[in-house]
Length: 261
Image 1 (cartoon, rainbow, N blue to C red):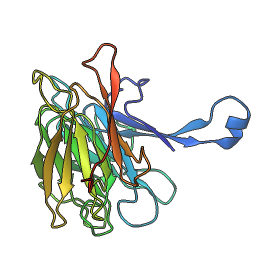
Image 2: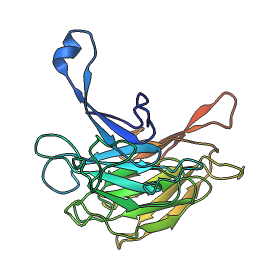
Image 3: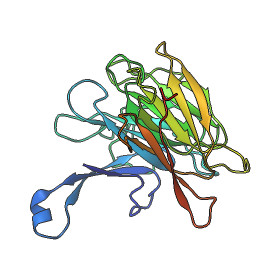
Image 4: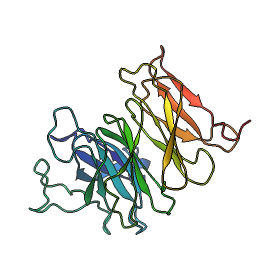
């Protein structure tokens, strides 16, 4: 499955999420591997998508952040749209007079929308609550915080979210057990803005009791992406993020030193 927000080929290209299914038969024919299954109505400037079984029915669902564009007035901004997968493989709720999106009246709409912070630009789905239910972690570029939306197990999420203060412009998010205590943590990089000395990455360490403690790591500024993986051989997840303040631009690797003396 391939997801693309926004589609870029509709009159309201910032307000949709496109779902593409992998088609091996077409791939063998050398004419493309993906076919569009569905176009979904979203909020202002849908910017990031996460996939997980949010309601425990063994079907993958979708969650998309809606990053309010400058001057936008639609009420669906600065939130997360959740699309549960139906038995026929489609996502969301069919349009009706009661729920139709005036900008995209023929598109399926979200099952629910949940408030996050301002400028919610990136999302990850993972069990940060430790109850075997995938929760949502959202980086909020404009309010300079990270929202954690805990899952009740049926695909609904706690409101208001728990918002954790960050630094200037968190732009992406990745989830991993950085301190290897079997509780998932998360990390965000910073776009930076006017704060020249903003650290490259903050790691929010899960204390195991439903709270997160921020730790900042210096390395650069104006970073707009992040990923976590074991990059060396010590079985600890490391971090890699781009740094756009250097010339030429570079990728910064932060090796995990948890437990190192």
